Image 1: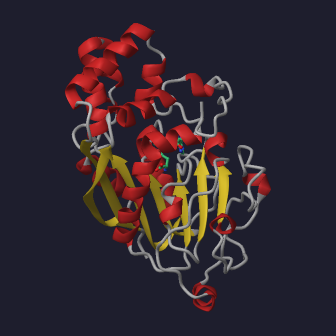
Image 2: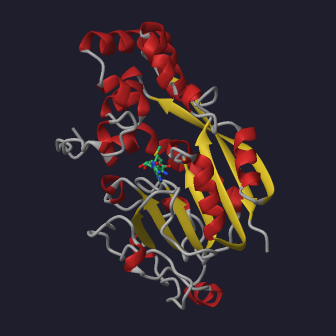
Amino acid sequence: MTDQGETPPPATPRERNRDVWADGAAYEAFVGRWSRQVAARFVRWLDVPDGRRWLDAGCGTGALTAAIPHAGVVVGLDPSLRFLRARPPAPSTAPTAPASRAAADATPGPQVAADTVPVPSVTDDPAPAAPVTDGPAPAPPATDDPAARVNRVAGDAAALPFADRVFDAVVSGLALNFVPRPEAAVAEFARVARPGAVVAAYVWDYAEGMQMIRHFWDVAADLDPAAEALDEGRRFPICHAPALAEAWMAAGLRRVTTTKIEIPTVFRSFDDFWHPFLGGQGPAPAYLAAQPPDRREAIRQALATRLGPNVIALTAGAWAVRGFKDI
Ligand SMILES: C[S@@+](CC[C@H](N)C(=O)[O-])C[C@H]1O[C@@H](n2cnc3c(N)ncnc32)[C@H](O)[C@@H]1O
């Protein structure tokens, strides 16, 4: 069930694989709410002036998009149409530039070039889903409506449907490790970035710092040896600071730095911790959904014993990387 009380639509064949991204409400309850907190700190770290053009690659339900300061134009790209159609994110609390300044700072914004869209764009979106071209384009809208400044496009981070050198900031939150060839995505990020633009991403530190998911896989692997291979701490070598820095440098980006962003993840009770794992979104919940009832119950009990029934105060660590395109 979603939090609107509706039964989610049946999974498509693509969604039946282990990384399921289909139910926006369930994703928000599981990880989206924590990604929003990391995103706010990440965007502050980037310190991009207002009124710029951003690409959020692997935008999902819009956790990172929502943290981008107003008066900019954002293109959110993701292969999951259901995530793209999720309710627009809440407005950022970041400072907003006055409309006149936004217009003065405006560089050409996203422009429609329908013939270059490789997959359908989202049709129920308030703003037209649009790839970006090099040509003259409208200025970013001077509006406080977060939906109006976000274009959502269906697509693959490793094959971006945009021209070269068109974005002032290319960012990605918790998505790079889910792209089959992350290095191909980073090369694409660098390609679509303008000279001087920042290219940046964050991923969970699954091996150590993302405690909520770490507890899950540690318990699951004790009960089911096959779970070990699905553990994101093992699956995703890109989720370490040196690997991120290497990928950024290999893409020709300069002044590459990494940082750790850690946030508190506090659960009111064991149920508050456990319930979001039942939503089926992402590797751990998808693994759980595929288990027989007795194994699900064994995992629940082992986690309850480990974490206790009261407030569970954990932390979630993410690695962030940024670099700049040569001028
Ligand atoms: C953990 S979610 C992160 C979503 C959002 N950025 C956030 O921080 O909450 C991972 C996202 O990566 C997307 N994704 C998976 N493969 C992708 C690809 N090849 N290109 C772009 N995004 C992809 C998924 O659809 C999903 O929305």
